[in-house]
Amino acid sequence: MPAAHVVTVTGPIPATRLGVVDAHEHLFLRSPAMPGQEMEDLDRAVEEVREGAASGLGAIVEMTPIGLGRRPELLRALSEATGVAVIAASGYHRDAHYPAGHWVHGASVETLAARVVTDLERGMHPADWLDPSMALDTARAGAIKAGASYHRLSDSERRRLEAAAIASRQTGAAVLVHTEVGTLGHELVDLLEAWGVAPGRILLAHLDRNPDPELHAEIAARGVTLEYDTIGRTKYHPDSVILDLIEAVVAAGHLDRLVLGLDLGRRDYVRAHGGGPGLRYLMATFVPRLRRRIGHDAVDRILVTNPARAFAIAPPADAAA
Image 1 (cartoon, helix red, strand yellow):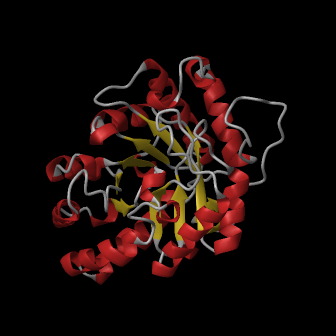
Image 2 (tube, rainbow, N blue to C red; image 1 turned 90 degrees about the vertical axis):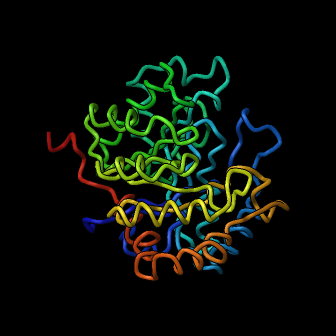
Image 3 (tube, helix red, strand yellow; image 1 turned 120 degrees about the horizontal axis):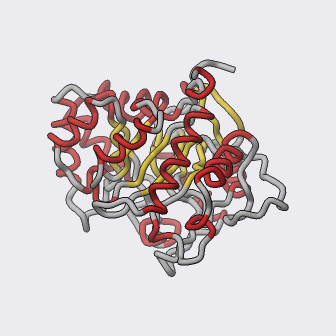
């Protein structure tokens, strides 16, 4: 197996084969926190991904975790139908996406971590609840998700974050953490580092919801990857805010710590469901503007080189201990 490889839903491939990567996406999703926004239609997902591929996307990191309608068999079928590489996520989201009584709230750290390790090493569970009698799907996860609430981490979220850290140490998979409105950045990194996760294995999502270039430069200087994904979401801010932010972080010397995604986690954002901006927006609309700001080579590093490094499977830290 090549040293720098990623695990996709159709199997491991060299990281260099990913091409342009949308580093945070949702293709199939169901959450009680977003009623009426379910995405469960394979044909519509294939239509959307084909549009993205036509615009230049080569790979998608699908960050729907355990408990939110993740569909490993459909992800595999979609990748085979479109030719787009898909890296799926194991792990867990923040509390808002799990109703009271859901098994993740009462599970031990050990149980939570074991479930993630199984997804990564053997194959993803076809259901979103803990049912050991069900056979695993052949599609394996290739990344780990965790989530925090706004300016705080609940006890349940902390256990799931620790489980993500354990699974990352055991498997070498990267951990991407949902930051609510870009908060708790340093605190989340502190915890993951304390639990043995190297900074180069950590990505923080949605930091551009809090477009603070000085804060982002501090976090990037720790070796953490910053994932910006509110592109095209004008209800938060115009794209010029993200362009300015990227330009400032690059000027501060952290070009190698940036990746981009769209995070189309609602039907309303997907063209195949009648919404927008859709998967084509990154390459067709945003990237041309970004190239004018920072140049073609720098954009290629953000879209191709950086995600290939960030999501490559590293030697397990526990094996070296």
